[in-house]
Amino acid sequence: MRTKKTVLNLAYALGSSVLLLILGFVTRRLLVFHFGDDITTASQVVEKLFNFFSVAELGVGSVISYRLYEQIAARDAEKISKYMSMYKWAYRAVGLIICLLAAVGAAALPWIMPQVDRGTAYTVYGLNTLSTLSSYFLVTRRLMYTCTQQGYICTRIDLCFNIATYLAKIAIALWAPNYVLYFGVSIVLNTGANLVIARRFKKDFPYVHDVKVTFQDFKELGIFHDLRYFLVHRLSNTIYGSSDTIVTSRLGGSVQTTNLGNYTTISDSATNIGNKIMDSFAAAIGNIVYDKSATANDHDKKVFWGLDLFSYFFGSFVATAYLCLFQPFMTLWMGAGRLLPLGFVVVFCLNEYVGWNHRMVGSYRAVLGHFEQDQWFMVGSAVTNLALSFLLYRPFGVAGIVAATVVAHCIMWVGRARVVCRQYMKGSGTRYFGIQMIHLVTLALCMVLTYRLCTLLPGGIAGLVLRLVVVCLVPNAVNAACYLWTSDAEYLRFQAGRLLKKLKDRRTAQ
Image (tube, rainbow, N blue to C red; front, side, top):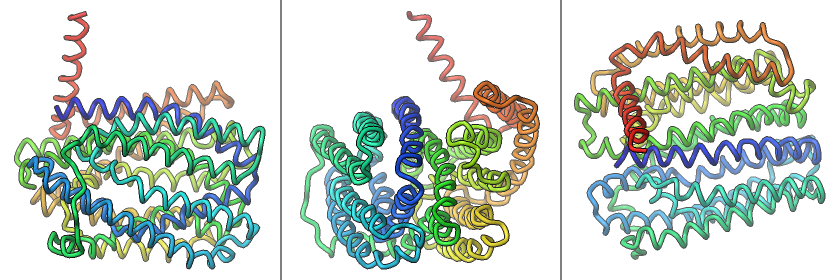
């Protein structure tokens, strides 16, 4: 059943994401060329600022979700209802706190965006405040779908509303270029999607009902103990994900920030697709861990090493693809004048590799709790990111800012892996980090070999298509030759065999 739900989540997610990817590229180009660098920069920076304000969420979603996995596995409807009610009221409080933080933080806009007109900056800021408030009041039902591996239901609903949002933005940019309408339509339609999911929730989970919760309930369940440590994680993750854009806006100006945003738009779109793939496994990981009382047996160890190898395959492919495709695609999409240096692209690729390569470890780490065990790694990551960003910008430009992010990301990775190897994969720390050193060697081989082959190809659309073919073949072939025969790939070989057998049986039945 888990495998079937994982495949369903994956199929719905990938199908919708490809369409949204195309529409996202269209709307980004229209935003840059129809509204200009100032409005584009304002939207990017304000989005990142609200990521900082979202620290007020204190990781409530993650803390309650890993507790919710236990109760779903135990089929305890009473506790499920209690956790969901706590989640709802906590998020309402968080939404109000974020709005208060936004009111205070508005004073920093002129300093962060010195080149952007104040009226524009504050208008975009106000629209984001409304969007955030509506989200925190309505989004809570989605957690139950995620924890029960039924995220594809939300994906289907979101798909319809997201398509409508993109089409409305395209129409506004082309025929009524007003940035208030452009950003405002997202608020209306996102609210509509959350209302539809809220109505569907009552049908899908009739046993989940609102119950009265008090401050004492939060305290008795140990939520505050977990949140105290998770706050550090939340803040560090926010700094990691948001500081690049904010520092670039302050030091580099609107044009540089917009150009950086073009690259991150591509990576964010690809990341959205990748997240759909990885999230399809995340809920299954939570169920596996707590079905076995958070202790890995021999089979679970094979699953862990198989999923970790899958993360490496995915991460090395993404890094290689960005190295070979970023600049040609950007030239066709936005024009050669919007290109950032190759050094930036290389560092950006390394950061993407670090993220995807330890994504499955991150999923295991998220469901295990024990946030206190790597909190100082997260503190070190945040401090390093901010300090190095300002130090490295002047000598290296935006590439220096991203390099600081790579260093910070690696510190996070070590902390997360340390928790997993202590709490679940006990005694596997040395083996895990040894494997990562080997992965770095094959990553370098994939990137250098593929890039060299791509330099032999022509430019233009035909050249981009040929590069895409090379990128799909070469790194995957290298990794298959190096790893598919190993014991770490046993779980992947088993699952691939099961899938092929099912497809063969289905074809025979037809």
